[in-house]
Amino acid sequence: MSSTALSYAGAENTHFLEACTLCSKPLGHNSDIYMYRGNNPFCSQECRQEQIEIDEAREKTWRVSKKSKKSDTSNKTNLQTGTLLVA
Image (tube, rainbow, N blue to C red; front, side, top):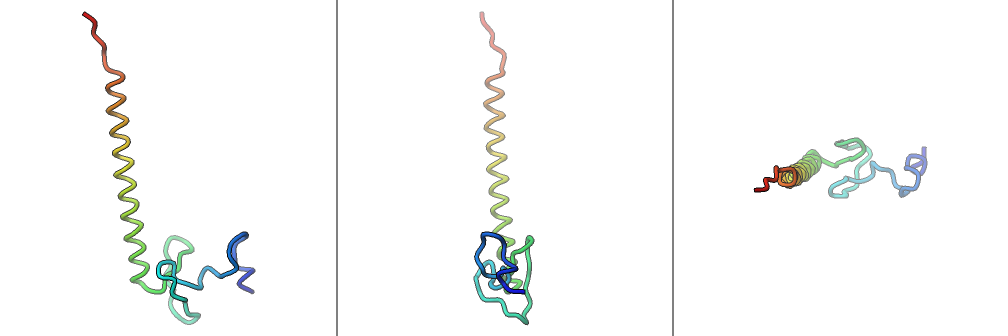
C-alpha cells in the first residue's frame, strides 16, 4: 500500500508515522514508535512524556481560566439578582 493511500483526504501525501510529532525526527522502520492520543507518534519515551506534560499544563491553564470565568459570571449574577429595597 502506498503512503498516498494511507494519507487522509486533503492532507499532505506523507504518512503520519514518518516523523516524531514533537521533534520531527524521522521515525525508522525498525525502531520503536511511542503513540499518544490516537495518531500522534513519538521517537522516544522522553518526547512522548514532554508532550503529555505540555498537554497537562495547557489543560490545567484552561480549567483555571474556565473556573475564573465561572466565578466572575456568578459574582455578576449575584449582584444583578439581589433584592432592591426602597425606603
